[in-house]
Image (cartoon, rainbow, N blue to C red; front, side):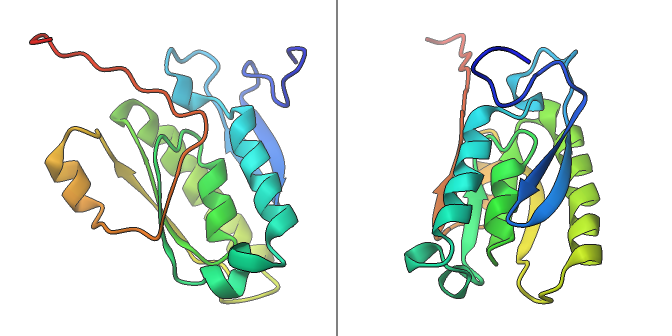
Length: 162
């Protein structure tokens, strides 16, 4: 693992405790896309939610049913943090990342539902392609949202007319 990192991007998978659930997130160390690695900021957001979920606006009773869009979801760690607090999450990213993100979502929803001791607490998490400049992608996500989240979000913009 690199000095100062919580996760090594050379690992193919990482197991994290997310709000009391052991979840496994696949990564692709051979990809040229930054979204195929679990970055530290997503783990920090999950720990923040964990620390603050018993009080204030991050308590499950206040978050239940809130709509969340995660921009640049990558491997989906932050979205799972919100879904485990009762939010209905749309985890979005570019097409190059969706296969890995979808695999992580399917695997971990199954794990959560098998282990869940508090039925009905888990909200939902869905995957969607989102190119921020594509009106059809935006409309398909069905805004508005109660929360917009993103951790270590990076985007490149290529437009020949610029």
